[in-house]
Length: 174
Length: 165
Image (tube, rainbow over all chains, first blue to last red; front, side, top):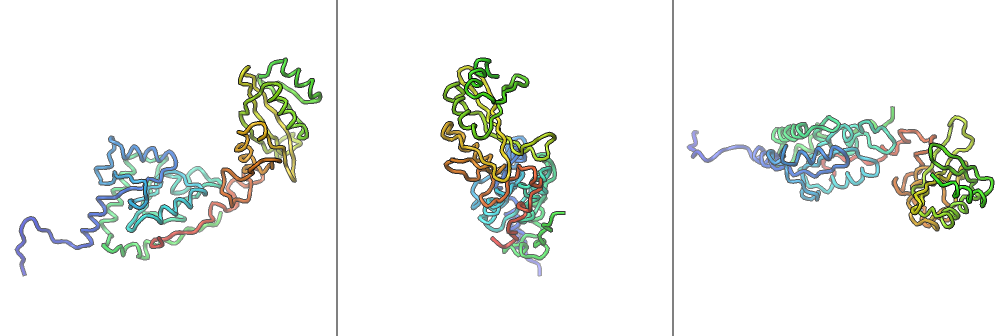
């Protein structure tokens, strides 16, 4: 059955449409604790201009954000704060672990530095570098947008999928 | 560097103090029993009115060291720009030195930091709590017998998964 549509009407799935809206309006929560935070600021500033990707609205209230960018090392005194901020953010939400320290602890293999935030909070995208260039962070946001578009659903069913529930990494010391 | 006259006056009041010079720095080695009195004299009679820093060194397994903890007090005279370093050794099992908060109010947080990281108690301190590490921390991590990577404190957190918020 052929349906005669006018030119200004597009048919799509609701999931696609919702994901399209979400991916182009990521509001970052800047959890910047170290030098990666400087690159994060540079990414948001005019030269690199994160606004081109719809993610320039840095909000300092987790209630208004849906993308947490952890930029810098997280010490054991800061981790409960990070977890609370993550829990205060509304679903759907994503997390970018920016830089070597946030992802693995980096060179700070000491008693107080958490060896990778993905041990304790879910992480969607890792950015390597020490610190990463703004281009790398933009690439991570673009990749995250692609991920949201690819697997996003209107009701957030993808977050409950077993593939997203990665088992926590082994916590024993070697 | 302290002036010769200052050193002479200090030596006259406390004979037997080990006073030495190294690269234009004046160091005074004080037994722990006289520590408070020496610092009080330096402040009130010799004009060292500014406490620059209080810190500590752990000499565990240090070559040639006989005592374990070396307390370091850095003082300055704001009028003559003299500087002096006062050192004092304390040992296990209960390293304790008198608090100098009655002399310099600013010693409060400095002593809390030394307590936090080295576990040296300050007798008479008004509020000897941890200042840098979390309250629940049990060790004193700048001691040389504390492992660099800790005793698992950095792993002792709940894991938050997707959908648990």
